Amino acid sequence: MHSTTPQPAGTQPALDPVTLAVLQSGLNQVCNEMDLAFVRAAFSPVIAEALDRSDGIYHRDNGELIAQGELGLPVFVGTMQFSVQAVIERVRARGIPLEDGDVFIVNDPYLGGTHLMDVKFVKPFFHQGRLWCWLANTGHWPDTGGMVPGGFSANATEVEQEGLRLPPVKLYKKGVLDDEILSIILSNIRVADQRIGDIKAQAAALATGEKRLAALLERYGADTVDAGIAELRRRACARMRARIAAIPDGVYEGRALVDSDGVVDEPLTIAMRVTKRGGATDATLAFDMSGSSPPCRGPMNSVIATTKSSIYLAVKHVFPDVPINAGTFEPLVIAEPHDTFLYATYPRPVSGCAAEVSQRIAEAVFAALARAIPDQLFAAPAGTSGNLGVGGTDPLTGRSYVMYVISGGGYGGSARGDGISNGCSTIGISKTTPVEIMEQRYPVLFEEFSLHEGSGGAGEHRGGFGVNYRIRIRRGEAVASMVMDHGRTGPQGALGGADGGVNRVRIVRGGTAYVPPHLSKDQNIALTAGDLIEVSTPGGGGYGDARARPRAEIERDIARGYYTREQAQRLFGVAL
Image 1: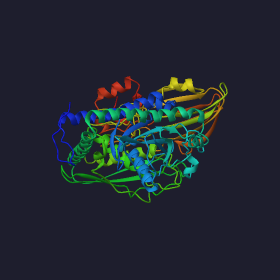
Image 2: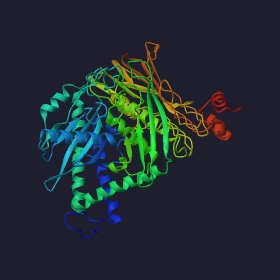
Image 3: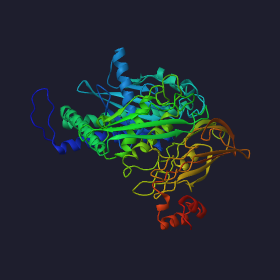
């Protein structure tokens, strides 16, 4: 049941608290069901098992976020609304007619995107004959062409080398898949015969959203739901301002480093200046990154949509209780960092922006705010998705394959305790595909999957640990490429805590070990049966002075094998 008060013509109905709460849950549930439909129908393990996808509802006029599922990747929270806005702008500029059943496809990173592998579907939703909102989702496709299987080219110097770039075009017209556009896509990507399953799953998820949203509108009426959306936006903004108001006024600075751009072996700097102003009703956080490194030659440039979304997700990590919609972002004022590698324009390569640079941006935000509200912050997490792509042909089946591996790492310690181990990346809830699935689908054997012991940064509350894994190629020939980070420096400690352990990559070919010159970035490494890929992911930073850690907790860590006694004595500064 819901109640409304009669309103003059042209005004929206008033809402009681119960109805508002039900509408909020109902909108989120629409997105959750889209997420589940996508996962259950998807073909690729990176979507079906690793959960690298997201679904949301967006405003009909300006594309702003209305709701996103709880199961969606946080980094897509901001970027999808920019993609929807790009579709709206294209429709208006070109007078493109919208029909029930249309679905646009877009992966252009410069039009509100991330990297080329994150493919967006955007669908107009009609209610009683008029455009009521947009439904959109993102799925990480295992391959979109380019120099290397999987798309993570470490040495690309222009976006064309990274894969097929799609502007907003109608892949579905009135519910019918356009075979000509589909044939262009499939002719430019690897393992094309396997993509149709993901395409239909992505479209089916939006169709599920249509049905559930139509039922919500039928039950409560479009005017009531519109009023609820407006009120939820206002309340999210007010709650975010209230959280920001508790931060002391001032200017706070933080820095983070990217190992290299994959081409020039020098670190890139993110210089973050955060300014807090205002009280409970007008508080803002302003973000200035203008002091960051200039555009780089390699693929670690970030498009502005990803740069902004990285700040959104970082603040959401700090204030997790604030609901997500466009109102959440209103108090966050971001100066666009032109002439830096955080504002990529065509044709700068960008394959590392969403998976890696975004996490360094978040780390810089955490470092800055730790100076303002240390009790609410934490040391830096592992901050890398550990992107590894392995592609080849399985001689047993004669089928080509592209295996994409993402991996967890340690979280930073905090005032509340030690960081967790093998946590998902800063930007999302994506998890490592179960090794049993990968061994079943691809000609590989995981010989090790273990904790990266000793990688947690020392502190009163230590960082969590990363993971080690070792993959052996079982048969055939393959090539490996990786875009990872934190190989040069570990995740930052906070309030005197030590940095976490670094990322390590080692390839063993014919018994000879090879370490990439850029430590965590390389491409087209030729492999054959029996060769090994060995990866150790970073641990989280430590929080607080290591000498304040209780002796009993150090002894417990030693007993569990997390540190050797010698490591513990050195890291925590105690005689054991």
